[in-house]
Length: 178
Image (tube, rainbow, N blue to C red; front, side, top):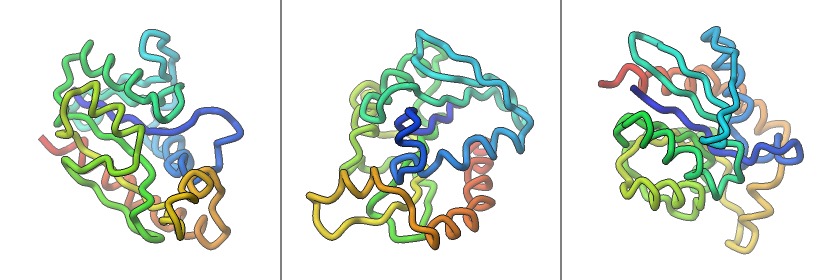
């Protein structure tokens, strides 16, 4: 069994922010796979879809917590379903990536990302997959919060749309990886 979780802030006012960069992709990917039935699970503080893709049992998770409390969704699901960390994919924004850069990585430092730090702390390991999607670093560290909570510029939105297939392919690569 595998778990895919998108880190975000689920409230409307954050919907188009850089922190929620993946937001435009999750519904498109789920629709593309004909998996559009989300179910709220209070014990996981998440909307989830349980399905099977490419003969792999899969839980897709949209935490309904603030990003910095993402562990409240990911850790309980992983423990209940006995999902090994190496079978978890966390999709998140990455300020250290320049425009249009994305990467699928196993075991990576959480750096500044408090959502990742919370997951690492509760899973007791860094050994899980991350799909990192750029949001660009601001000029100073004092501008990070404002940067991740700002919206993308029109030219950046165009770059996001152009990356959709690549992002979908990386998700599929994770699912197929044994």
